[in-house]
Amino acid sequence: MRKFSIEDDMKAKLIKLSKRDKVTYEALMKKIDEILNCEDVNHYKNLKKPLQDLKRVHIKGPFVMTFKHLESEDKVIFYDFDHHDKIYKNAPNHSE
Image 1 (cartoon, rainbow, N blue to C red):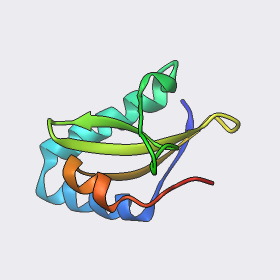
Image 2: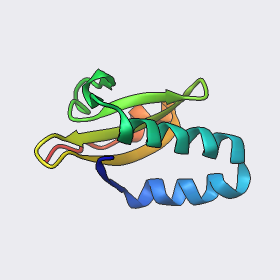
Image 3: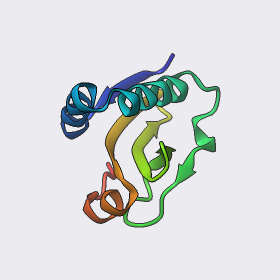
Image 4: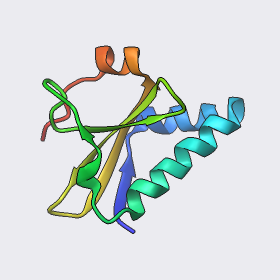
């Protein structure tokens, strides 16, 4: 299993989801576990500018989770989870 961290905005969304929508919360947690345990994180879709450093995965239809894989540390940072229309409009550039 890889090391990982979850950004504060996403932590808040996870807490809300765990109380309001357990089905989506479980789907999201299952996908996080899948990402952390997969052999090659690079098969997930890379985003285009200005989010070129992030990858994305769909969860339950129109919802998207964005994350970044730091190969040097073998660490995954989970940034956001939202409807795909909102996530691309509101997401800042996460390049380091």
